[in-house]
Length: 416
Ligand code: ADP
Image 1 (tube, rainbow, N blue to C red):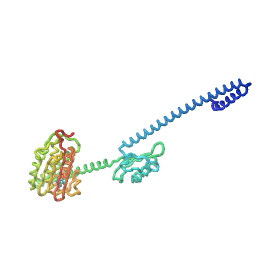
Image 2 (tube, rainbow, N blue to C red):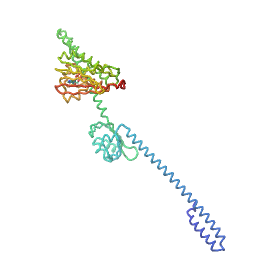
Image 3 (cartoon, helix red, strand yellow):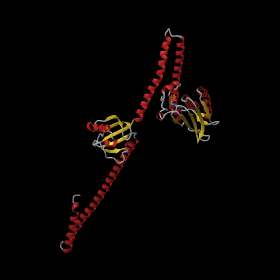
């Protein structure tokens, strides 16, 4: 109502009319009527003012609760984004156009040990010019950029970096780094493995072909024929050993094992007995110490393979002295130890001998019929059974290989 602001004036007028009625008996009636009229108008104005104040207070309260709900929505969205950024298997950065870090997720923190250096330039935190250049290109072109980058700080890693600009808003940049070091390593290992297998197979095959060609010649004498045929048989045997070992290795690496209750002591005894002749032929003494029985829930063939490879190696790489095979239950683990007084292995080779096709002395390994896969098989089979392999060796003094396999607790079998 338009006259509302005049309510105080009506109060004054009502008071004036009241005073007039009191002071002038002639104008008493007029004064009283005027006082009543102005009083009613002033009261109406007072009530209306109160109503308006109440309405404004209600509107203010409604606005405040709307702001509160909007604020809590923003917080919820931010928390959801944080959770999302934490859940992504990558380092995430939010950068301003000057490439200063505005935000990073915990993986980025772990990766670069950023700590409280939020606000610092990307280049000084990652110490990578390549990453800074990538982000700079996005700032200049506005186009997303992607590149594989080798990082040297805080450790050597390879990351797949992707950087893109915020579509709406303040020209901020997102940078995502996915660690592909392991993937690239596996690719290299696989490439090397294929190259090694090809090489290992090609050598005997080339020999076989060359000899077969000589045998084809009409003037090839009988002695030579016999010599070459023997050699061909040896090379074919070698090819068979390589393919057999590759198959065993691939089964070991597949991670599945069929177990039954078996007696490891008996298995070791049988394998040692099989190889005793070979040791004796080299003039080596062989000692076997084992309990009467040692039950394991395992794959019998694979346990025999572990024992065979270790004892066979001990004989192959020992010129004189003895080979000792020892099996015992040590604190809930079956521990098979094969020691020899042989060539030994120098420390620079020691941590590589379990790699596929790694040999300290290629010639000696081939001469003894080795494929370079024996120890890789031992390691994988032991791990497949939840165990580990250890080696201690001194050059020209001998080696001790140990395989530790968990024994079942009580009568219960370990999980398959
Ligand atoms: P290989 O078929 O060549 O014997 P392995 O994987 O069994 O392949 O062993 C890898 C290499 O480790 C061997 O070539 C050899 O140089 C070394 N090695 C293994 N066992 C012994 C041992 N008992 N004494 C000395 N060297 C060993």
